[in-house]
Length: 121
Image (cartoon, rainbow, N blue to C red):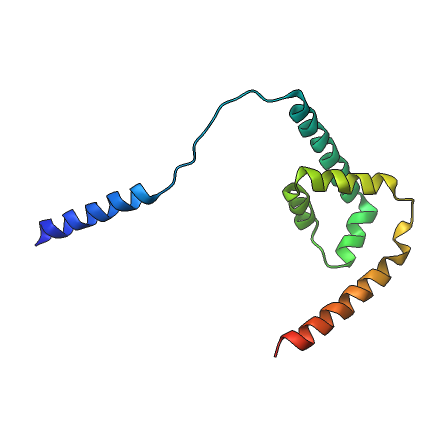
């Protein structure tokens, strides 16, 4: 009886391992454009991180209740395209351009309030 149970467990493990899909790895050459895009993405990521680590920005984020470590983790999790777009926006915005930011905060807050009011019944 004990031997039959062990055989059954071994068979189940073999079947479970056969059902697992192992990824295929393929080696190949990479192009120069991929190397350049990776380097520019890292430069953009460093630019965004340096803007977010400034004392004025960090204090403003902290006053809004956002942890600086959480912001750095989120920047690290962004894709290369997102970082490139964000860095481009940071470079093109004039100083003090967030004067209408409160309008967006109010619009989003009202939208969320309406959403939760009618969808959480």
